[in-house]
Length: 347
Image (cartoon, rainbow, N blue to C red):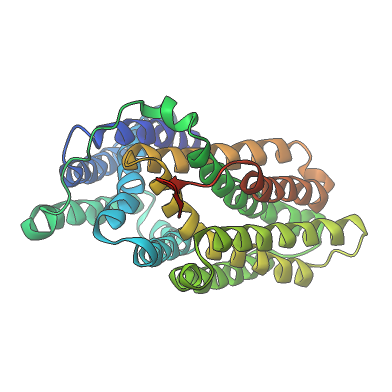
């Protein structure tokens, strides 16, 4: 079921990335939200895992429109540090949601049954779709995007766009590999409890939110390129520290908490700036650029987690190695690929 949703999300990213130049963004968003709500209701009526997987696949497609268009809409409303600040706020919301959603889901499950989660999501998605429809003033600000020739192939062969996108995928992928593997590693390999993972996750999210909401300030002080590099380097050093303490046999859960904070701080510093700069480097191909960035992050995290899963019984070391490789690669990509230049002037 989870794989079906993830696969649908990947397909949806590519679909909505292209549709942004054919239809008004807000109209696509409204339709996708209402479709997601309808599919959520349908999910409450299925009677097999096969049918549920099919519904979740379609839900994944519908859900991906918000992920693609939210940063694009922000870029249309704001410029430079202001846009970076807003993308940081968006990232803060997105980081909190995975932390609190399982808690809400558990309460609904225990109180009203498994169908209640789908009903709750249907109500929220439906309300958002209707709200967009009944706000003509706001809705009028988001029309069709300007068609750009080349499509996804052009983005994949654009070295500056790939510089920011792959670097973003490396840093965020490193964090996700740790997060996805940590429950098993902490409870089985380090003798901890699930509450230790929760502490690690919550502390990491808190410091990420603090840094992400200051990303606009950092970009004004340091400039775009230096901010991205500093954040990437901080995350890489945090991952190296986690690997080193494991390599020398000095791993402890409190030390893991401590170094993981630095990994999240680095992502908070560079994440909003890197995402915005990748959109700028896409050459006004904003919707496809946004879709490609998110897809690369998903693929990197999935590949890293899939490889680590084969060695998870060995504890934290293989997880630390994979995260370190991804985070260090993020820094190396910044050094090896060219930064974006607007005309002859470097941004």
